[in-house]
Image (cartoon, rainbow over all chains, first blue to last red):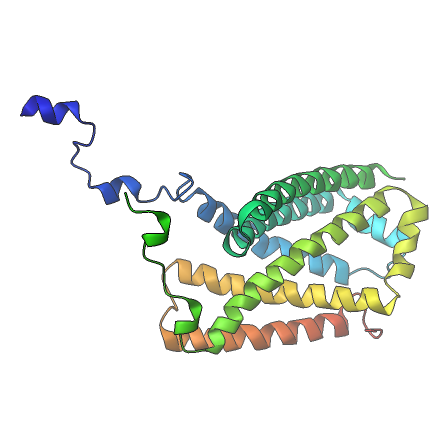
Amino acid sequence: MVGALRGADTVSLRTPLGHAEGLGSAGHGTGHWWAQRISAVALVPLAPWFLWRLASLPTLLYEDLLNCFQGLGDATLLTAFVLTLLYHSELGVRVVLEDYVGGGLRVAGLIVSRLAHVVLALAGLLAIARIVTQV
Amino acid sequence: MPSAANRPLSPHLSVYRWQYTMALSILHRFTGVVLSIGSVALVGCLLALASGPHWGGNLEGLFRLPIVRLAALGWTYCLFYHFANGVRHLVWDIGRGFEPKHAQLSGWFVFLASLAATGAYWWWGPFAGRIL
């Protein structure tokens, strides 16, 4: 009897629910949930900072916009804001697609969303690098 | 093994009595999607600024267009709403404020505060005195 129990890998002190809990349908568990919360917490100071920085602009003319984000501190925070925003956005759009879109359109949407967010993040990063070095 | 069709479904939304907190919840997702679309415009503005005085110099004129102003106004409202309601969600996540009474009260607060913040931002903010 002991041998029979040993042979099956279902023998465990953990219940079937215990095995499944936290894994989710994709096996990713609570990773998505955590990532969404952590990026949200990061955006709590970053988003108001960005709005405040825009509000402190004297005009929207080229020189003023450039000066606003050229300082290393401002450029760092702007980079953090843009990348966190896009990361949080990707996580959110993924949930919306999973919840409201079905079939092949969902798969296509998930792929397009992921790739678009990556491209936007790269473009934003390179744009900020160029803004910092602009004279 | 039962087929997928035989498995119990979670109750459909229509079995619940309509409550305004549901509208707030839907609005959270809606504003999130609008902000995602807006982030494309945000990166576009950064690229324009990075590409030099020609495109960067056009941004000022672009933001004089009423349609662009309206879009920017909508984007800031979505940001304030999603921000405030997002903080409400984070408070729930640490296990507080989830009692119906508190959740309803904080819902009203979030709704009114985001409207007030948008108004204040456009009154005193970068577009002060020239909202549309």
